Image (cartoon, rainbow, N blue to C red):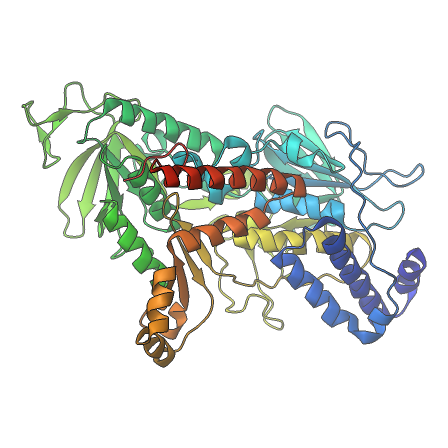
Length: 576
C-alpha cells in the first residue's frame, strides 16, 4: 500500500488521480467491512471515487484495509501520531454537531500512510452531543437522555480524538495573505484567553436561534436546539401539568418542521391539560414541504386539538403585570370569575400577535416555544472569523467544502454556504442547501475525505447532495415520512381506485398530492418505525447504535405488554 502511495504521488497527474481515487474507494469500502459506519453520504463519496478510479486503477488495488478499533486511547491524552519522532499535523474541528463530530470520526477511521495520521481535536462548548432529530423523544418520554444526548467523552472513547470543552471565539491565520486568505495554519482563540494551534481547520459551528428582532423573544421564548433547551421545556411542561388548568396555553411560533413536530408532541402529552397553538405568518403550515407531509400533519394536529393560527406574526413578548388576567377572548380584562390569572409559572408570558389585516391581540401563555428562524453561528461572531461570508453570515466555500481563499480551512453544515461548481453541478438544483442533519451527515463524509486528500496530495471531490426524503415526528407512535419517489398522477389515480389503494392506505402508505412531485408519504406507526430505524442507523458510533437499539427493543417490548394489558402505549408520555 505504501509503495502504491509513493508511486502515485510521483507519477503523472492522470495516474495520481486514478491511484488516489482507488485508494479512497478501498478505504471507504474497508470501513464498510470493518466498522459498519458506511452511511449514504459515504456511499456517494465511494461511488464518486470508483467512477474516477476506472477499471485500470481498481485492478491494481490491494485487498480492502481494515480499520483498527484500538480502545486504549483516552480522550484526554490521545495521541494520533504514527510517526517516529515526527510531530503529527494538527486538525482542529470547531463544533461538535452532526457536521463536526461525524467529520472527526470519519477522518480518524480512514486509512493513513505510516507517519501521516494527524492529531484530531474536537472543540465544543457543550459537554454532550445532541442528536437533534430525537429531542422530541425527550419530551414524550420515548427516549432517554443517554440516547439523545450522550457525552462526547463516551462517544469518542474508542477513537484517538481529543475533546476540548470550550467556546471558540476567533480564528487567527498564521500568515495572512494580501487578499485576506491564508495558506498555512494558525490558532483558534478560546473564550477565557487560551488558544489552540492548528495546521488544518474545520468550521462546523452549526446555527443559533434567531429571534428576528422581536422584543422579548430572546428572553422569554424557549428555543429547541439543544439538550439544555429540552430540559427547560420539560420543567415548564411539568409545571403546566401540576397546575392542572385546562385554560393553560402553550404557543409554538413557527410552522416549519420543528414547529409542527413540537406542536404535535406537546399536544399529545398535554392533551386535556392545555391548549396548544401553532402560529405562522404564512398561509399554511409546512409551506415548502411535500404536500403529502403537510396533509398528514394537518390530520394529526386536528386530532390532537391544536389550534393553527395562520397569517399572524408575533410582534412582542413580555412578562405579565401583577394580577393581570385574560378572559376567553385573550384580551386584557378586569378580574372576574371566568378569567384566569397569568404569570404563575416562570415560563409564563404575554404574546402580542398581529394579523394580516393589521389588527392586534394579546395571548396569555404558560409556555412559548420559538422555532421561527435560525442563523449561522458565525453571523453573531462574524468579527472573530476572517472568512468570506454571505450577508446571512454563512461561510463561503468552493464545491469541495474548502473555504474560499483559505487553503487549509474547510466548512460544513449550517454554518457553511457553499458555492456550487457550474461545470460539475454538485448540488442538483444549484440552490442553497437546507440546514438539516441530512446535509451535515453527507457533508461530513466529503469533508473527511477531502481533508485526507489535501493532506496526502490527492484530488478533492466536489460535494454532491443526495436528497433522501423528509421525516418528522408527530407523536410517540406517529410520524410522516416523505419519500423522494415521484408518482405520476394517472398512476396515483389508478392505484387509489383499486383494492390495493385501500390496503396501502390502511398500512400508512399514502399516494396523495396534486402533482407527481408529491411522491409517496408514509404515515402513522409505519412511518414512526422507519424514522427510528433511519436515526438508529445514523448514530455516530457502533457502540451508541448498540446502546440505543437495546433500549428501543426493551421499550418496544414494554409497549407491547402494556397494550396487551390495556394500559398506556409508551413510557413516560400521555396519550389522548
